[in-house]
Image (cartoon, rainbow, N blue to C red; front, top):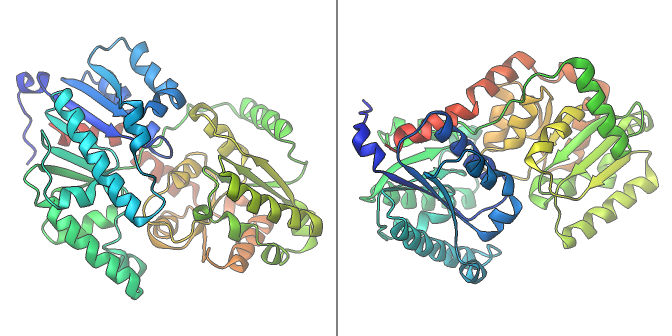
Length: 423
């Protein structure tokens, strides 16, 4: 049974959020905790340690704390030279080195702010240093994004030898971390992984709903007007069905398989004439050259419209792109863990064409969010595209189930879960 500490002890606590990532879930996660802290008058102080780049690229999140006029919420950036010294995550060895670098920084700043509890916002990167027994100045909890130790159960079939090896390593590391004397709670985005832990008697692991903000309802004429304005600005041709690939446009997202010219050629001329692929998000120069080459090959052989918007999209504009889409594409390549894209699509009541692998595939099937395909095979993606072009989008998913799933992931549920267990 959860025991509420006294108000006196809560008033003296200093919770430190530690997060050196600036993309994906991370800005939204911090923003929702700030909002909840303010709206529910949470006691104590919130010390948020981030990268200097976070202050530049997510000024809206930083400004939120200033607009609230709360002196108990403070952003602290690590030194520029400390950030410059961090290794890239380009190889296994450099990731290990960086993990120890980040934990040293966590230790340093926890001591500086005199933290009474530290929430490691990206626990996955800290597992190995904690597993070898490194101590911190205070108890810690973490958000676990990518558990795989239950994937044989999730997939319902045997795993490859490499996956089994990774599972064994993960189980060993996690057992060490969960037995660390300073480990308080592990928040996990995968509900099936939480069940795996709890059936084995480990109740340190708590399910954390991945938060999604549902925008206030817009009257239909206004919504249609907004969509038409965005369509015109992007140059979407009339009568095209818009299939959106959103976020960091990397190979991991399946963009290479999506743009396989031989697979897209499986579409009929009528289907190709209907299709508008909208690719929105940042892309590395090397990967852009590959993507642009594939786009040129498709344009030379098929009447598919492909629109690219290779830029970071601010949080305030994200919803507009999902509202514009007819179908949201998520052909991730053997992705482990949750995807905010599924929640954004469900919040906009848009079906997805998703990878059938792992947690993503399981959630799409269970909550009837859309179609799943073997996204490692371009021809299977093309078959999914054909269905998205020939069947009404409303029939590809169950809007009632989508809405119920989104309600379970309301931002308040996420923040309340964290602050309840950090007491």
